[in-house]
Structure formats: structure tokens, C-alpha cells
Image 1: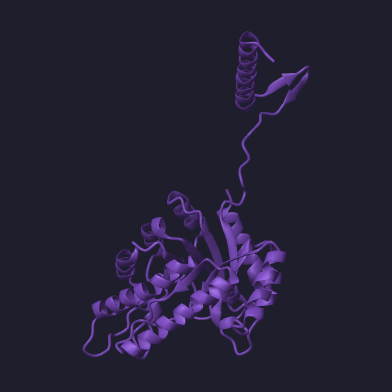
Image 2 (image 1 turned 90 degrees about the vertical axis):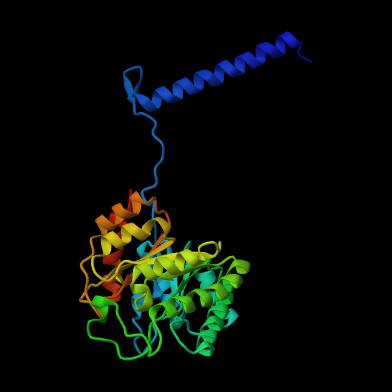
Length: 324
């Protein structure tokens, strides 16, 4: 057994060793050291070259064509190309059975891929309360599907007024309200309907990310008003689609980026299925960094070029833009 004097010497020795180790470590980071005639490079902290995780949406391979592109193939493609995960479009799922969902989950797990996002559709811009309730129930069902697949977030839409779509809709985002109603009525319907969904989302631990997906949400003042009304819920989130802004997207991205949880990044190889945009992803990446955005970015390749060539090209552009 050590005497008090011996114990003090031991502790002093340890402290001196630690002190010297820290000093030597700091010196090695600050300047190169020399061992004999051999220069030793400074020790530098490891920095990830992929600070933003990239997903690919299954939609990139389908675009609502008659024949669905299998989600299983998207998962295989994603792993081969180098994506970090896959966003699943609900309408593209073959079915909603537990074995099928477990199969997708296992396929992603075996390939080291995340399944962070389930994109679903609903329309709360509807004067008929019973129809809004149908879409609330649809969302509640999808929360259960997401939970089964281990997916922590869901894409949500506000919806749009019914009626003919104007030819300049994707330039203005404006559709005429139903007779006797206003956009403010629609905003209230969206808030009330989303509020119902958030109750169950909170219990399930699933984040509902409202997107600027045309319709009412193409007006980002409306989008922000809805988000702020619901932001006290820990399950409320925001998804920004780079291709769905009316007018200049960059100031709108700057405004909303600080509250965004996930981003969908559009590309249009071969010309857009609906419209074309020339998006500067280096500029968008700078906006993201300035806002300290660290969430997922999901590719939505919406061009007419074959996805087998367009998706890898899109991956290269996004990876270069979003790498450190």
C-alpha cells in the first residue's frame, strides 16, 4: 500500500504526463515537428467530406408513369451510386402489407442506407369538412406506415383549390378560391387539419414536414403563417423543394432555410416533365451553410432523360455542391 507521500508523487507524475501530452499534442497540430531529419506532418482534426447526407427519391425513377418503377430497384441503385438513403413516395409502393414494408426496410439496412422520408399527398384546401377528414385519416394511416418502416418524417401538402389549373400556374402559383371562400379560410382548414395529424405524429415520434408544394403553399407568406401556427408541436417540420418556388427561389430559400428540416433538390436532365429551372446548387449550398442546415437533401430528378443516366449525374452535381 502506498504512503500519502508516494500517492502524491504518483498523482503529480500523472498530471505532468497529461500536461506534457496536451502541450505536445497542441504543438503537433500548430506546427510540423521533426524527428531526426524526417519532418512529421501536423495532426489535423478529421473533417467529414460529406457534411450533408444525400437521398434519392423513388419518384426520380417513376414520374407517375403507367408502370411503377419498383422501389426495390431504387434501393439497389442508390447503394451502387453512393447515396446515403432513399425517400419513398407512398403512391409508388407496391402495397401496404407488413411483409412488403419489412422487405424494403431490410433491403435498405443490408446496404447501409437510411429510409428517412415518406412523401404522401393530401388536400386540406377543401370547403367540404368530410373530405378534409378523409385526408386527415389518410395521413394518420401513413403515420402508421412510416412507423412500421422506421421512417422518422413525412412530407405533407397544404393542397390547392379545385378547378381548372391556369396555364401560368407554375409561374404564379395562383388558383381562384371556391365561390364564397378566401385563402384565409383555406389557411385555417390546413392549420386545423394538420393540428389533428400532429397529435398522432407526436405519439409516434414522426415529424410532419410541410412542403412548398404548389397550391396554397406556393405563397411562402401563407406557408410561414401555417408553420408558425403549428410550430409549438415537436412533430411540426418544414420541407423545402428547390424547384417549387414562384419567382426567384434564392431569397425565399434564405428566408425559410433557418427553419427547414429537410430539402428536396430538383434536377431536369432532358428537359422537365412539367417545367424547367436552371438551379445554382453552389449558391443553394452556400445558403444552407449560412443557415447551419445539417439535415438530409433528397434528389428529385424530374427530367425526361432516362433516370439510369440522369440520377448519377444529379448525384455528382449535388455531392460536389454540398461537400465540405
